[in-house]
Image (cartoon, rainbow, N blue to C red):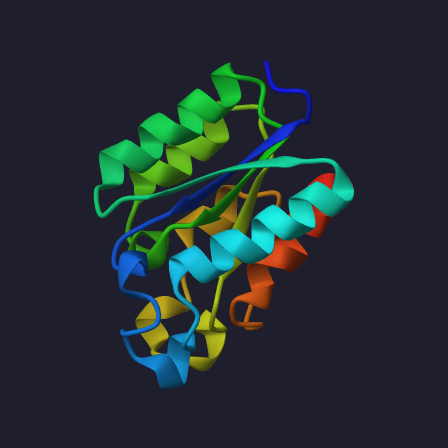
Length: 146
């Protein structure tokens, strides 16, 4: 068990393309840039980050369950497009006691109608969206207060 409480930061499909993919919507920060910001903030507030990315739905489910089994303080979850489609991820969040905070770089409610429904948000403790890469830092601060 680490000295500091662990927060899992789970990222879904296409988030490995940050910095290249539609920078007008998602910004120019890469996932590595965000990891660096989170590591810095985590050290300031006494947390440890376990950051991961996958393009596979089942792996996100596995990691949510793992975070719970390992006693993580929280999960920050940017499920990408699975936010709007995955009942499996919704059910995984509902099945665990670890709090899950939904994170989005953009504000889905200002975008296409199909992005307005969030299966993740229906199960999550809360949602932080629309602040670009800083959404993750805000979510980490929220997790620290849980």
